[in-house]
Image (cartoon, rainbow, N blue to C red):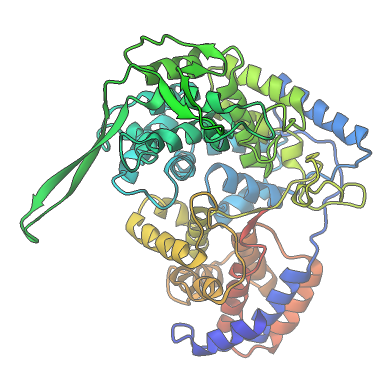
Length: 559
């Protein structure tokens, strides 16, 4: 890494300086420093809630049953960075982090959770998360990402009940930008509308995303591990047979050709059963049935009948159960099942009592997504440090163990989180306001990210494998170069000219808080001070330090 960094920076015309002692020292100490865990104290976010108390009791019982000692509560610096990334999708501006750390209010964590859930960036973040979930990062042909975002943005801004959002996604018809909800199903329709495969993806994605059920392999045979049978797949599939894509073209005078104009999701008449072939070659028949429950076979709109039972009348509340599991996984790093969209008797939940209670409360509160987030983020488990101890190092879901949530699991930043966090780090005081603009520049960067990091919609390109193109994107990218420049408006320049930061220690702490959300450990500060004293150019020393922090492994993970 260091050799690559030095070679790259020697060749970088935009950054005409060598990898100095300060950058080397910073990379070494950040990579090798084990952050000290804070002392264990009586925990409270300041919120008294019976649901949170129940979850805490159940999780603590799991620790006792498995002879595990939980990690201490995370420091304010560690926690504020985490909650910003999870709720609003970017690291906190340095001024916000410093103010939170300095605040001595006993309820400051619960207050910040509420503040972030009311922030416009909450809407922006979850619009992006669910756009990627519903149609993928690589937008399918003749599908409108703009329309999908518009629909979701309005839903999250109004905090619409989750069951109402899903109802619209399942029943929508019309123009792909005038009614953006149609893009979920449009993204799954491809090929010949009269073929058996035309509605297969819509069937599988609906079950997986909204119900937490993986049924895709039952298209051809009974599932080898769970209770789903081949006939159930085609019964579910029959609900979608009335949906059809209709593409429209327009004349382009510049090229003299017809080009794509827009697409719409339209109703087509289909009232009969679905015929499919089993593995023995026998033709079978399937009628619209939801998890063993028949619906009105003569219904004019089958998708509406499906939406009614999923979103309104399902006694099992599978929609709510799946969302509880998915959102727990979003905030905690792992859901109650692995994977979190494969639920059922074949894959028991790690904490079924918690899933039952959260589902019951989530449904009773009208599928309120903000309330669900509030419950999860106020639990003790969410507030623990990511540092484990000898008594809980077995709690390692990455190694296949059942998660016990005795420490926070480290999550790699998503592409959008990385970009927006770099934007904050570029100019921490004004970065929050700048997030609302620059969408075209953001889209270009994300396209480069996707091109370099590869992947597909089933294997989203979110992990950093350390390849040379990936390293170059981070090291030489325009955002990093702007962040470390000595020009007016860069964060380095802001720190150096801020009268509050009168010495090296204060300035180094400011750079650490802006990049990593914490102050340097004593060992880090000692090594950095030695390196900075050896640097002849003080400005270059601070540029080197900030460059190293932004390129450290600690920056790109949410812990």
